[in-house]
Image (cartoon, rainbow, N blue to C red; front, side, top):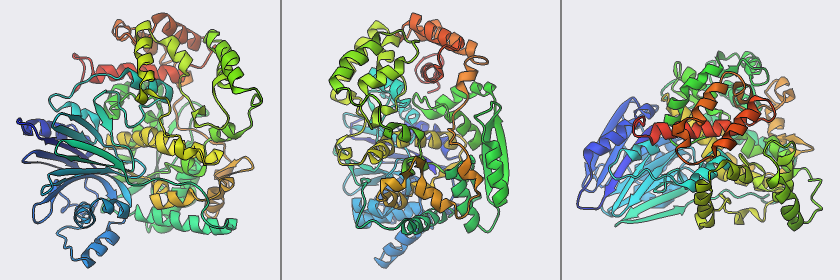
Length: 628
């Protein structure tokens, strides 16, 4: 796990080595163990290394022995021993034991087709000197990040957006449409970013830059649907357990200590249980909790830790943890409204005191249909018999006219604007509420942005979803957007803030591809989520895991914004500097703060998103406070 940065400059100016070194230094937290920068004619490559495998032999940038190919790589290739063995049979030789060299030689032998052979999490860039071509790629599910910025004759790229800002000429032009999308989804969906000129390479895509021409193309697609005749449940369970065991086993390869995040929920408990079966030593486990009742899973985690005899550690997050927000915003790069980043940051900090690598249960909800909102979305709507046009014109219009604190208004909005079983059922701040929050000038900017092709609220191509059953549509949407742009961003940035590598066995692409072919009625059966995964995990997990109510990983924002954070939120959001940005109407902001403080409505999600957006401006935009 590392940080990468690079420049391809085809202009007369050439690569600025000092700027490349600054780009690389800004990624030091991702890789404190080693660094390297090289300039190769029109190309500069920078790397910060967190040493996990082949501690002494994996220095980057790395080149082939003939000096024609050069790579910077962030991530882990879990099947690199098998790929390496195949390459040796084809006549390749190796100077190191690192997976980095395996990628380099695989590209030399197979070109783009090498991507199909790699099992892991990765973002890398290879400079192909004979072809004068940059080839870059990102893993299938988007575990590792890749940002880039292109202007005439020049391309910069990096693991984090802040690194791009260090290169001369990178403009900080904020995209109003991206702010609009952020307030809906709590993140800026790929390939957009908060800046108009910066893009994210989507998961399962590769990029080439040759003679000033940039090309982005997909190399893999997740396909849902039963393949062949339907099998008996036990056959699915056997295959599932085998693939899960192999996914965990592959992620235990390391030359440094490994631990696991443990929430006490099904997914992380299953990972810890499988690790305990495979490992020779007790598993190190790490849990985060809260003082507020209903938010802490410490007791559940303790039960699992005791059951498997783990070496267990805990940390309790309090309201004063908000003091870390500016630092957290710095590591997250973009406005990011998922408040679970706070406990994620602290549990990673605690784990890093003992280990360099942890396994997590991320991906289980998307993979097996575990979100309670899936059950809600698939439940027949009582108003489904009302024609869509009538609902939009009558009920939808009524909802938009009601005061924002009217009880039941959001339900009326759903009736008026959302269809049955659509991925859009998961929204942050509803569009009509955002429009009330916006100032007149901001409404104009957003309106123009929404009219553009890229401003469409459909952040995932709907075409592949049309032939899928209702549950698969929801899973597909989340796997293409919510998972890589929210969950995995949170995991990557909060863990790498402390130079901690996080591995997710449930997101092994072989396992993911298989589960996508399991019938949906074995994922969500008779109102029981993750049905088949529960049946598999019951072979080794205690019964208490299956009896607990599903719990999210957020912070108690509702209570905090009515007590400890009440004054902070008001001071920040109504500060002249904040209002001077011109995004929001002061009177509406005051009402939102007032209604929440009085307990009339729970606006804590909105307040958190707005607070993060303001902190982001102070960390990255304001000339007197920005850090880069």
